[in-house]
Image 1 (cartoon, rainbow, N blue to C red):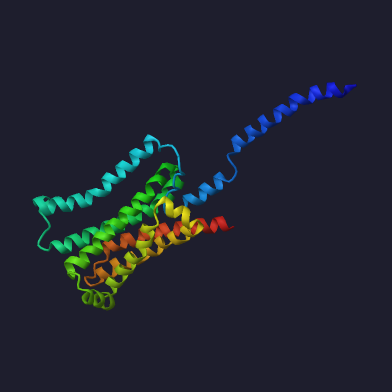
Image 2 (cartoon, one colour):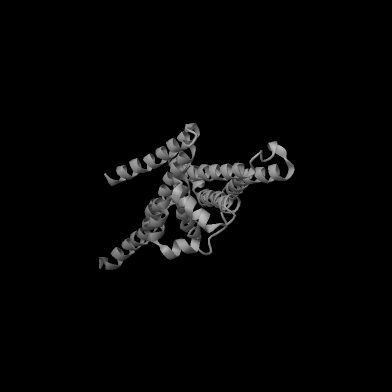
Length: 255
C-alpha cells in the first residue's frame, strides 16, 4: 500500500546522500592529504610531483628561476673577477679568496634552506616550499667548489697531504665531515630516490641539521686562529635559532 509511496519519497533522499557526502568530502579534503602534506612540508626537500602531474604554475616557475639566477651570482662574480679583473680581481691570494667565498656561500645557502620552513609557516607563503630543494642543492654546489679548491689548489691532489691535514687541523676535520654528510643528501634529492626510500628518506635528510652544526664548527675553528669570531657568531646564532624553532615546534606537536 504505502510501499510505492514510501519508495518514491525515499528515492530523492537517497539520491541526495551521495551529493551531500561528496560535498562534505570536498570541504574536508581528500582523506590523508592534509596530514601527508604537512609531514612532507617538514622534510628537507619539497614534495615531489607525481608522475603525470601538470606543470607547476607560473608563480612557482618564476620563483625557481629567480632562485637559480640569484644563487649563481656569487660564482659569476668570482669568474668575472678572475677573468676581467673587475671587483678588484681576486686579490693577492686568489686561492684564499675563492676558498673563503665558496665556503661562505655554502653556509649562507644552507641557512636559507633551513629558514624556508619557519618562514613558510609564519607567513603562509607555501610556494617557498617549492624552492627549498634547489636552495639545498646550491648549498651543496658551493660546498663542492669549496672542497674542490682545497683538494686541487691547496694540495694538488696529494692524498697523503690531505689525510694529514684532516687529522692534524680540527677545522679541516669539521669541514671534511660536513661535506661527507652533504653528499648522500644531494645524491638522494631526486624524485625517484624520494619514492624509493620512502620514510627512510626523511630520516636520512635530517642529517642536514648535523651538517649545519658541523659547518659552523668548521668556520668557528678556522676563525679561532685569528681570534675573529664576529662574523661566525652571526651564523652560529642563525643556526641555533633555526634548529631551536624546530625543536620547539616538535615539542608542541608531542603534547
